[in-house]
Length: 520
Image 1 (cartoon, rainbow, N blue to C red):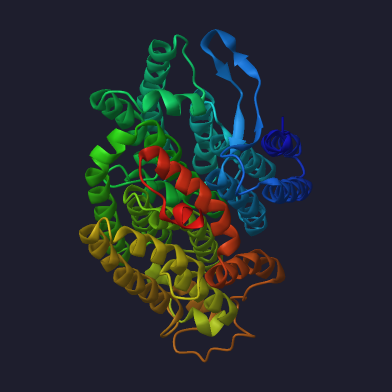
Image 2: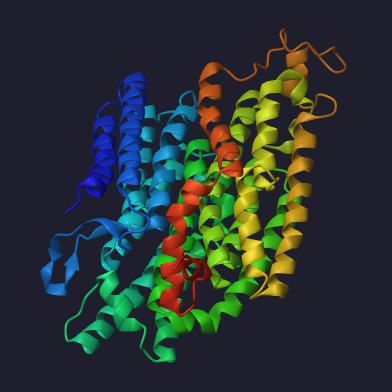
């Protein structure tokens, strides 16, 4: 039994409880929260080094009885796909804590409460990716909603209550639909092997021989929940509201990690448990994916709110991930998982720099900005880096994953791939246009004009009342920039972990893995 995953689960939970008791001392609460998140990052590094990409499918496993009457076990383990997501969580949480260090909170709210909720959500997210018991997965799937609901509802923008409730109800509805399929799996397993079970590895062998109609009904229960979480069009409408109203730190985890539960669910549950249904319904999913790419891109172009802009770009990016998963190609599937990681890095950085712009201009509306590069050249440069990563410029991390998705999808799904490629052109349009409106041209917006001494005044960055990035903000963004460049030029360490797990997933669906075959 490995205790690594147990430690990864319990450490942020303990940290959350400790920080919650420090709500009267915000500075100490922040420091303790950062210390726990960095310790979690060290544990994630140890888990990464202990994982053998060429070894067993599920590693670092542990299991203990929880509800024996129903065959429920507290079972945890990771394959390469889950491992990279847990590593991304461990990397982003300290970045988010550092980025939220100086945030102004709503009146009556404490930094201790905010950071305690962040650490509690980290526990839930690790549990989702590490669970190998379907019922335990469902529990974490629902539990992770609670801290995010309070992060949005208590610490968010003017419409935070509406956005939090919409997020919660959408996700709760999807979870309840999935619960019906979870119960269905238990019934099916009892009929097939004489004893009901929620063990994922056992269920994979049980469900593959189910009639197509049964697979389709069970598949749909999981798919709807994951499509809401991902989100895929038309189940996406909660994300722009939640992303716009969430505090910046929570927004980073919302679009960088929480949404990936949906695409991870496609890979871990929909494809291996219901292979025939996955193939039968793949055209429908591909249509939704392509529509999401084009719809999200076009809506991003027309946004006047920077945070809603980031949310709509995420909808487009998730379309690429879904395309890679349901193209049933090893190359495309590997690209989709890498895209999940890279999207968390690039969009997380984009959300953070948007928050830094808002902290200086006092508004999230694009029309209230202009010419900021004259006042904050370093912030402008790093905003541009985040934008280039988001549009998948060659040399940045997102390019590798997007290229793998498109080149891997084309042989099997040429029409959908060509339509998806249009989204690359639109991405360049919406990212560069946003940068031009916010950072280039004359200084606009009341706060910025006042900072330079009035309309038409000469711009002197050293004398303007709008500061450039400070040391803390640079320290927060530097690791993100490093990963954008390193994974843009050398993604091999991550690909080596991902590729065997993707190949194993596709083999469970009955799709040959060319990469694995070449290695034999």
